[in-house]
Length: 518
Image (tube, rainbow, N blue to C red):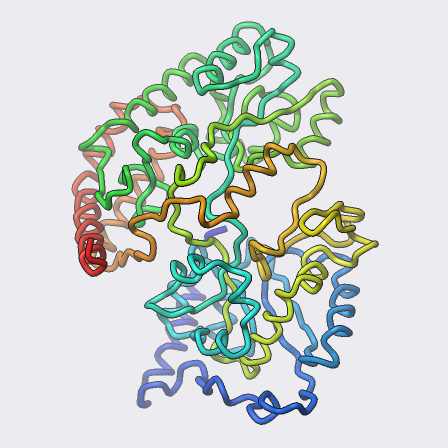
């Protein structure tokens, strides 16, 4: 979803910035900055009926066919309270980065907009496009605040302020391996209990099931090595703040120390060597780097094991495997430890909803979010018309009735961990594991929770590293390339750059921890 900004876009933003700076006092030429009390302040503090306003909301995805029915019901409910009309603009995921950036740079009036750390929220905040929300939340967003635990607020601030509402229902992703249960049983392999069992099953498939790929990754980016690291409960290897998901630099043991794979091989080096052996032995899909649809092999019934970013199996996978292999059956196995404190989180969320400074209805936008985070309204906007699109099963579960007319996309504008429902029919064990992910108190807090890395001092080195990363990383971490030969290439082409990034990251971490008294 990340896209490079086009030259034309860069020029537009540069022109907007220059227009804002040339010959003006500080604050002029930037997106308008009315005070929080500006819009309808008299009305908002009185019992008089609020004047009708239309909120323009920009979110990613495709517009569901029945969106107008849902909006009509929402507007009917809001008519005698906050009196809001909704203009919800959907932006295709492929156009999201450019469209939202151009819209903000142009000064077009938007009242609520989706953004994310993987998109450009840091850049937009630094450029002054978003309204700080602390005061708005305190006055008009009590329900928004209450539906998210304090950790979610504390560790998703920017410069000490709440700059956008975090959208999330958990504090780390579920993870598992999807297996062909029918093949496992056919080969007489008992249920998988350990990682060693999993690899032994892959070898057995290789030996006895011709035409079946033993194992492949759910995507080339989330490699076998990275997936294995998710359940590393001995050293707690995790990616750093500096290089995204890359493990060329990594943390261990929640101690705030930055490690460099070129200097400290273990334990990642062993995982890399194992993956390379599996590739050479024919366990890993030989076309793993060129496959565009990473879900296709498992859906087509051509692979026995695939990495999975959840505990359960989607209805899509269940249905397609039945269509392609009538006797095929899938199951999942996970090595996730659900014990309290076993998993580390920084409580960072992936998606956010911001109020642009250009909005003329900031208070009403927050009032709408507060309304939308009330249970029955959350249900409406998240799942559609009850009885038509879905039906409730208790307080926290649901059954889908019509996902063609309206489908869940709350993760781009509503998600909170209190009101989100789970779909009935799943494995009860997986539901229990998902409940662990949603409980903030089940996690150990990352010592670096709240830390933000400023890459400016090493921007050239990061750019240099990224070029080399693009050439080798995905192949290396999926076992396609020889471990030591490839690490030597990394050292020759990006070693000094990686070391400088490591040193700068460690310096900033030391300052952060010192300020916390650690």
